[in-house]
Image 1 (cartoon, one colour):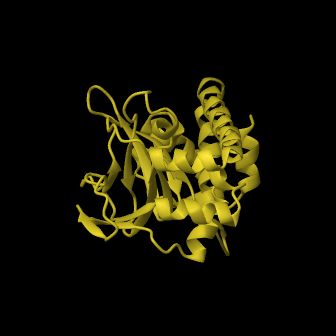
Image 2: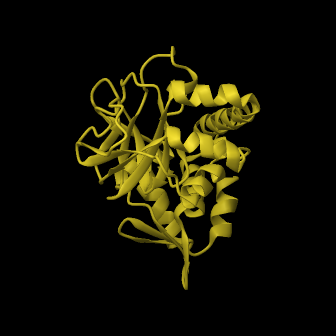
Amino acid sequence: MDHVAQGLNDETPEATSVGHGTVEHITEPSDELESLVLRTALFRRVNSNQARKLLPLMHRVVVDKGDVIFHEGDTDHRMYLIEEGRVKLTRASHDDRIQLLSIQARGELLGEIPVFDPEGGPRTATAVAMVNGTSVLWVEHDDLFAWLDEYPRVAVDMLQVLANRMRSNNERIADLVFTDVPGRLAKTLLDLASRFGRPVEAGLEVPHDLTQEEMAQLVGSSRETVNKALTDFTNRGWIARQGRTIIIYQPGALIRRSKR
């Protein structure tokens, strides 16, 4: 995997080649890009005039599947926004086992913690592109905070978003303690469906592009236990498996199972 974030400190307005990615300073933001940023939870209450001052502070890098956007242990203070594609966040254990933490998609943030807590230590996860042509925007801590100094009300709104993120993390921890594996699997499939699913004649098609081990890590259990639950869901007629795609026939059944 190539670390495409290396060298992003180069302060040049022209596009430069970094690994397999190309870093570009956004000098003329498009209306589509402005719309994407304004739909992001962190910037949802930003108006167009405020956004037009923020966007020129951003840079863009386009990467391919397997490219690393940032590494666990990096000490940069950038915040990333996915413009196109899909990114997985992973963490390595002391014995080099890799744990999948989450999957982020278009319009979602990456690595915002070091921006708001620059003294809190290095990055705690690695971000890896899952598809070719993944486009990621980034902004430096100093540039973002200079912009926030001009619009302090936005910072208050951001605190609410970060508080919601903490609440979601607490709920996930509670699920690991109180919810059984089939319940967590049902909830994981519903989450993937809400973000990546598309309607087909048979039901809801969910292309997740995860290995069996990664799916188990996302659920928080062993591969064998998750496969057993997937087989049970299939036998009940709730879902079907087609390679790295799930077809959901009965979302209501999954919702009920996730709440048991």
